[in-house]
Length: 103
Image (cartoon, rainbow, N blue to C red; front, side, top):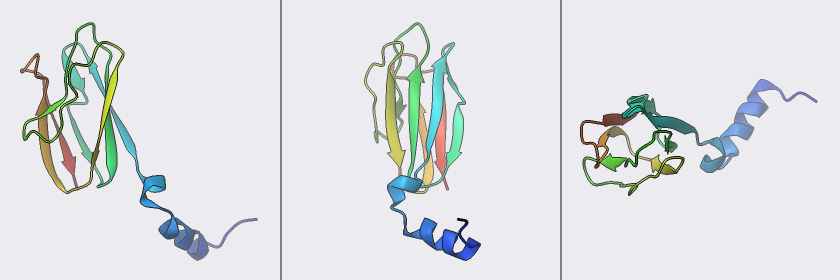
């Protein structure tokens, strides 16, 4: 049975935000964040995965989050709820930088 478009839209509006939330993946590899900048909607979770041979961190420049050391193969996630720009870096290799923009 197919729902009329208006009813389907109303069903989507009634879903909890957690059901509609997105996840964006950032790979850490080759001593870089890939992609190094992402733009997401409020409520999106960004997951960084260390696919490199070295320990790395994802550390907010404004001290809003810090993954601690991520061993190769490990991941860290942070949910961005407020609109803004969030630059970050690797505390071990400070030349590694990135940014999350929420809008």
